[in-house]
Length: 177
Image (cartoon, rainbow, N blue to C red):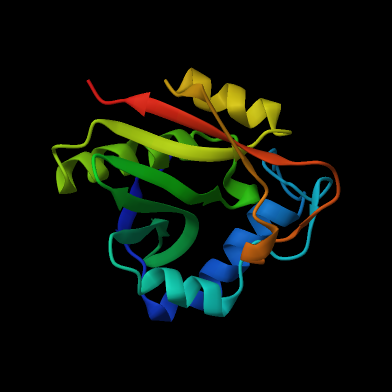
């Protein structure tokens, strides 16, 4: 596998990122195993939401690219939202054509390392995963995350799609040692 090149996302990436995020979360193509299309309908994010996220303090969105023949291809993204002594990892996806190649594990490791480099006083990494996504929860458990007792309602008010089944958000955490 070719090495990934990471950088902060910027406003010129918005169109590509909206397409990447919606494709990764809401379609089932390529070698995708992360699609939510059977449990959530509608876009995961729109241009306005992404622009607002990019302008938030304490939030950074990183893109991962593969450079081939002097051209770069956007293959993944991950967001870091800093909160006191923890960082929430979200807006994390890999383009379905690039899944099952270890990119997700590399991007997650990069996000954890980058978060700690930015705030070395962090004590934990946090994330929320749809409770119906058992295989994704198991993946994160293999990466050192644990389910907590915290379960939140699906954020219908956030305009991130409409659930087709009863969904909740499972909080997961990983201590920084």
